[in-house]
Image (cartoon, rainbow, N blue to C red; front, side, top):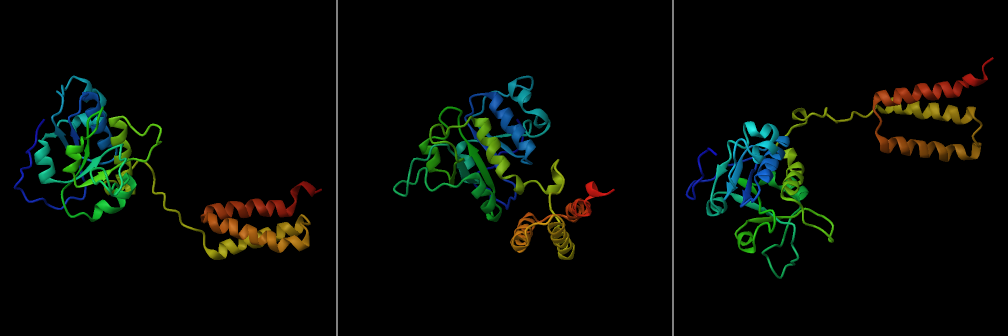
Length: 257
């Protein structure tokens, strides 16, 4: 592992992308899995407290995918004392079981909550994950600035370390990835113009007349159609497609001689 370890007397600088810290992981494969999730969702800085041996030919690099090229070899080994003194820390835990009478595991946020708030935190930030078996201890959590927990079934809320990191980093991805930086196209929808939508509603009205829909029901039916399309926010192409279908239906081609 390479990189310069942060020291307790360094002044933190503003960070838009949190670091990811793993405390006392027992299995190299989980470190590799977390590195891979970081690569998937645009995180770069991996901090390791008391890590296992990470053999370049071993399990960690085997599980890391393309993160073996940068995230994993650039990981920094750091002590827990240095972590909590140099970063604004968010400790992830599956078990809360506390209310406002005790603040070791309370209050807590979900990863989705953090995604909304962390961009406003003007400090170096680290998302901290604990051991595979027991996670972060109460003594460690007591020194953490914030607590994060993933909503899960009360019957079995404990997630695998790699799963927990993957879910959390996925929820925080908007801090690291722009729409242009994902494999998905820009999903912004442009609603069809209101005049085009009015043509669609007029075409529906013509169809209701053509099929002899009961006259006393036409006004209510037309209103329902308007509400459905109003909620759907159809695009120009979608509206034009519906217009073509409705015109054909209104012309009743099956009745042509």
